[in-house]
Image (cartoon, rainbow, N blue to C red; front, side, top):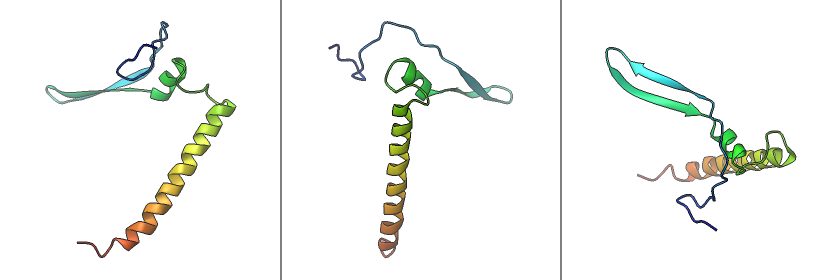
Length: 85
C-alpha cells in the first residue's frame, strides 16, 4: 500500500471536474472562489458509492439520522448550560 497525505492510494485514472468560478471584483480582483462537487469527485475515484445506488441511499440516510440525533442532543444540553457564564 502506498501511504499518501490522505491515505488514499492513487487510481492511475483521470477524473472529470465540473464546477464554476465566482469572482469578486470592482476595480481589482479581490478574491476568486472555485466551486466543484466534491461528492462527485469521490464517486469518480471510488471513495463513495455510485449516485442513487443502494449504498449511496444507505450512507445518506445514516448521515441524516446522525445529524438529527446530534441536533437533538445539542438542543437538550444547550438548555442545561444556560446558567454558565
